[in-house]
Image (cartoon, rainbow, N blue to C red):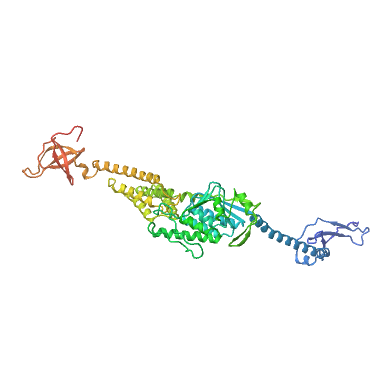
Length: 553
């Protein structure tokens, strides 16, 4: 019997198949069972097996049919996609270009206020210079220096004026609040500013340069010179009451402030009088004599009056729009505060003294570390402060010499001679240290007296210790036996060879020890003796009549 369903013949065939994604293709493995033609009941059955993706090979990739739909979509939408990308790029570029412009417009509407109070010195000069640079970086339309100062150092004042003259931002100096003043160095700063303003109840002037050792009063007035172009640039001062150096300083200051007045179109004649005669003006008088440009109650009132003005700076003309400008106040930061403390002459002198004493204790006690580290730091900071201040090098040399004498007193006790000489040198150097009489930059007498008193106490204790140590008996070495008491033992002290005239030798107990002794005269055993010298291992003794009470051998 013939099986109507013979075993199928297995044939393997590969049929390429496209998926929904034209980039992906895999092949199905089909099994076809073929039935012979002679079979009574021909049946054709196809069984599909589970398919698995196969790796792409060169032959299969070459056999992929063209993806007409994808090409058609690309051709249709390519122009639209290109146009959309160009539009996005153009929009981003416009936004990036507009952002700095908006930030610049916002910054240009700002007004920076720089409050300055106290003596003009290195700290205030650094603060104003950095603030003006920050205002220029932020493109502020105006910088206002709110000034209240009794004066200050010439070097710091000139540093501020250089920053104002070179500022691309208009600078207005506003003497405020009521009761403030701009004396001495402040007057020069007002004249150098693009805009000069004062609050009611303020004053400025008294710009005569003063220096330690100069005349105590104001400079005498110059002889009246005729007005007009034939007037001399600097009227001569009398020579019978002022030194040549003082006259040179006053002439230089007068020419300096006169040049600033001519630059800003202000009253140059009164400016020169402020230097030579130390005159001052109130707010209303300064406005009438064209020393300042306007008066205002406060900063908002000042901004309202400055609105619409045109100011010429190094970067060109600026039209101010300050009526509704935002006010940004720059306060001194930690750097300004530290610099203000360090550059105080009192602090500088104290740091210098602590530094010298710290190094002295470190050298006296090597390895203690802390005094040396603290002393080196204080000494360097003190020297840094002194190089920023107008100092007299003679005074500094006297201070260092005085401290050196105080240190030498500890190593070479002279019973106070070097110590008190060091105190005198230190006090004289402290009085001469600051070479200016500007307000706020002198070393007061109480500070000098306090530091000198500390040095005197130090010298007193060192001298007292040295005096007591000198009177104390020697307790070590050969000299320690001189004056000690002893007792003759092991027989009398007699000539060694038994002949008269030879040296008397024997043994004695001194300080609980057995010593070979010799003496000028024979001494009986058990007698008390006193040591008068030592030769090698032999002590020289003399007899004593009686032992003082409370003394034991």
